[in-house]
Length: 208
Image (cartoon, rainbow, N blue to C red; front, side, top):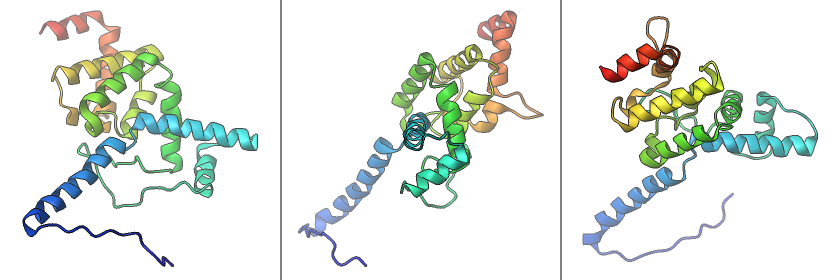
């Protein structure tokens, strides 16, 4: 039972009360914008946690085992409703599920091992903050798993970065579905892979 709560009383004029209330709410929003983990940060953090726990137990951990162990160690998940991002993906940044951890470790190994990919991601984060195209792990996971090779992965990320920077596509257009495509539509990843394989297609697209 909570027996005491630190508190302070500030005397505020009635005419200033509405301003103070508004600014308090704005401060909370700013803290979220400044302190929330990006998918890139979460990937590096999860990989670090994995190294710490494996070193202490001298045992290799699967994503499911790591998820269980992190919760046993007292790490907390963010609990909320089924929040969706503007692109329709769940905001999974506070999760410690086995699926989230598996995606994080794959992204760390496949994407963050490339210094150029890290540079591109950091530039997008600096420009767009929490609205960065790869703020959600589900979208960073697409870049980690869909391209055929590390060379192709860097090329795809370069192309998406270029299109976003030059307003060819909007940040909100970069979703998990638009990256991966489906049986009826070509995704951005497939499109840019084709551009890399077919130089004439690349030339035609940029000269159109």
